[in-house]
Length: 290
Image (cartoon, rainbow, N blue to C red; front, side):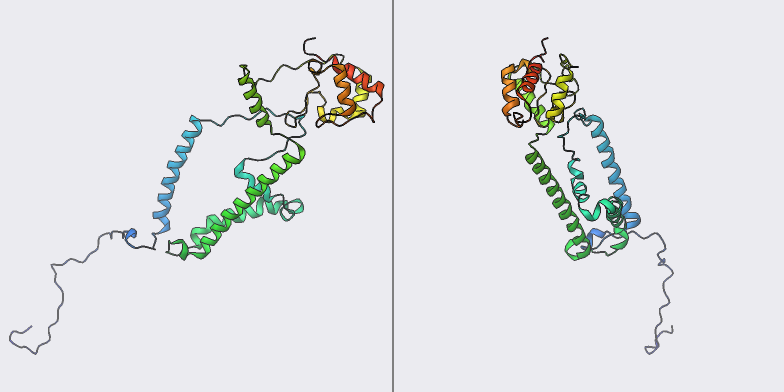
């Protein structure tokens, strides 16, 4: 550039002292951009994995420190037992009751619908690629999440209400409720509560091979309710006939067989007086002390 010539055009060719930036760029702080997000892979995914590992380790420590208690021993003779899954599976249990996901369509109910739900959850990061994080500006994702929550709540409530209705119409008391009541009664009486893992000693039947009594019981259908081993059904409040002689006299037994009592129907028209007397006499002999 010539000196003293004011009309000459000045051209800047750069300064060799200023270095061109070529180092690694610092990723921006996304918290300073409300409504935007960071890259799912690898930034967000790595954070989720780290949090998931911490939660998993904490969950494993909790299960080791406080293991889940065992349930009550299964009673195959309890025909009044109403099976029901744990609360977190009630929604799926209720879903499989509907005709369009059961019977011939059970594969769709067991594999199809859960597969679509979990597949959508896995594909959500790849389908919802927007940078918006505010839920009211993500109508599709928000609507699907609300629909899932409402569906799970509704199916769970319907399943539980139906279970309570079944208990009411069948007159069944859940086994854990019966055991809790017995434990409270034992505690009030100053006795040791019954143990679920240590059942009471079975009372032996007196004259168990009496063919005439067996014939009368089959005719009256006694084994249907009191079980084939005559131990009753605790969950359905049907008492055992073993040891019943310690509780009732022959006359009281004959009165109950004839006219019925509580849930037991009357058999005065189905059995003859002689048959009722024979059955009452045999039941009166069933004593734990003999």
